[in-house]
Image (tube, rainbow, N blue to C red; front, side):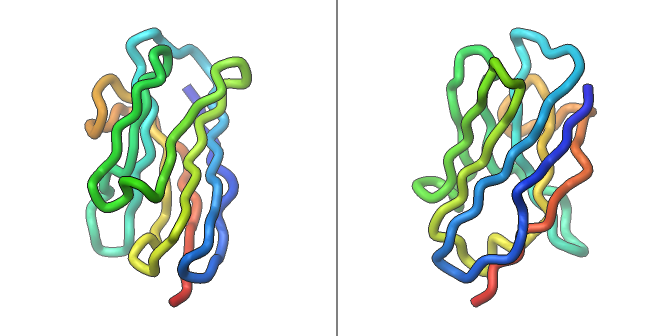
Length: 118
């Protein structure tokens, strides 16, 4: 499985960004696609997840109501719409393929920087 993120960048606090993750290779009906983020010196942390087939979504508390995870199965693409961004959302964002929301699997994208200026 290969994962390639895009759509990051610099935005002012209160602004929006949309991340994409192109998925190639075999996926399974049990797969859960997720977004994680990491700041220097900290562990990688869970942000949001979606069941690839059912579309059920899950979020960490700090992004509920601001971020929306979605997927386009026809185009094998995962998205993360981020609104009302805070400086604290600044991180490198990674997409991931796993089997359980919040628990990463072995496949990661290369990561993409999101910077929010206050």
